Image 1 (tube, one colour):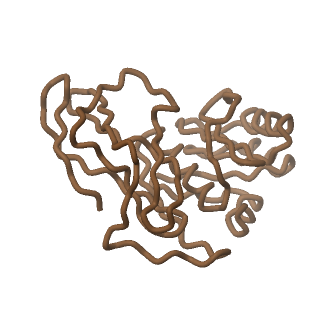
Image 2 (cartoon, one colour):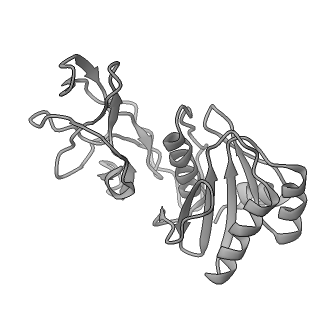
Length: 230
């Protein structure tokens, strides 16, 4: 657990106690973005993808991974971006677990989904857990949701309350075809019957993101992906 810091909202001047969340490194150790106590938080007026992520170095294995920029919602309605130190290095806490051997996967550690950003974070975490590297924002923006990309893979994350349609699945598949990549779909609200049938014929793994933050396979393709990884 990271150390708590006092944060003052620049709009209403309320004081908050904030601790950065921990995320699971591929080696199994928890890492947290190191907070900068000397800098003041800033109000977020609009979200920019490149500014919403920060590089954190694991204190156990030394791997450098992108995690969500620490943010806090004030009761006045302002979204605060919490500054981190330039080094962005984390040290292992007492709860750190030993690194797993190569080829072994530890259990996926879910993150509760409360916002659309949480859904994207869970999808990115899951893809890393499967073994995909260099998760980033996809070059082409999908018709709905958020596009993620890794080497040889294109993923779409739909955090809306509308079940994904056949057209949604087909658009993802077509985009992946133009990039000579495989594809996978993550939906918070599930899929229509036509979307499931179409995904099976096109070879698209489908996952549902439950609110506990654990991607659940919907079709056999997703079952296979979950079992074998990248």
